[in-house]
Image (cartoon, rainbow, N blue to C red; front, side, top):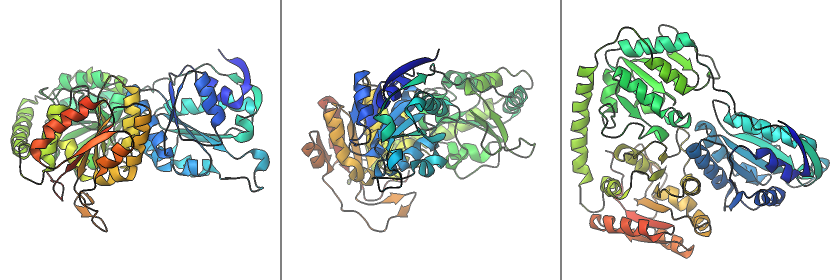
Length: 526
């Protein structure tokens, strides 16, 4: 039930967020928004000050995705917003329900040289679910409520709200709508039935499940669907670990071979992009949590779109009754390919040559990481290869830049993950470029007592998908010394035999700890 409240604008904005489970606000210092900071502290929210605006939004995204509820970032005006545009865009690509509240020059000073008078809404409009300016104190309740609902509405994503200084600092009253969660999108029963029939009748089907399966709390429905129709499953992003690594339908190493021979690929909760390994000639089913922005017809010769709550879609597909192909030979064929690939992988993982092979690092990480560990990836080839070799123990355990591929997100993701899940170890796996560009944010980890372990694959060069940068970087940068100077700890690891004891020290340290692992100059492509 709606109710009237009075107070300063910052207090009203925080009051409008009550009921959505938000327990923290990520923010840098800024003169436009201390009224929100004060109100958050008074409401017993944890105010997490960080060094850079993009870190605030990345951390809010990590909280939002891991806990499946809104994350909150509060930014200053002008450069405070533009510094965060890449992070807001990452949340857009990753469908993370991040609410961004930003300061703004007072309306009565607009056009008179007030600093900084910038139209933020025009800048972020294309990468948010909603972008608006609150024009008066009495509108705060409705405007904040609308932003939260927009962020949570499938397809989820960031929502942006400007709060001018003459709104956020002034006293007034506003009506607070009752907290509201958007209803699930009901799928078209005919489309669900057709998808179920296609999956059941296909001779060589494959499922590729992505982050939205986790974000939509559809992991159990995915497993039900796969087991009902005996379909091989590959997972990406937050869905990794949805099926245990030893599950007979879980595959990781033979995706290219599977896609090359599949006659049907069901892409669930992610985009049919580069994760299809360069493409496939198979028929495609694309299951999304909301209708696509540009409607794509589900014709006989095109992709079949099924839009709706993923739990309802997948359960409905599993309920299909009709023709059912026997996939035993197909599963066995892929299991042979998977076992062969893993046997080849084992040789790379055991490689003790110097300089350290990247795959050798992943072998030791496999032993050091517990099943509940959260892995944060930030970088190019180092992280791409890690995704091939590391098996998260459960869903909701792998965070990376996703389709947007924003380098430098790792520190923010790690910070947010450590706050969201304080009982779980957090390990950031970074390339040296990503680490060097964001390592000063370790000071925020130190200040907030977050014992994140950062493992840097330091090859002293830039490389993504085999491409070279304009210039190689300085080899052997002593990044751990920067972390130590900021109040953390760390060490350089130069040989394979040093990896295991160094990882043990890092996880036992209970402080932000950076392992500067000097790996071969070019990342191992396997």
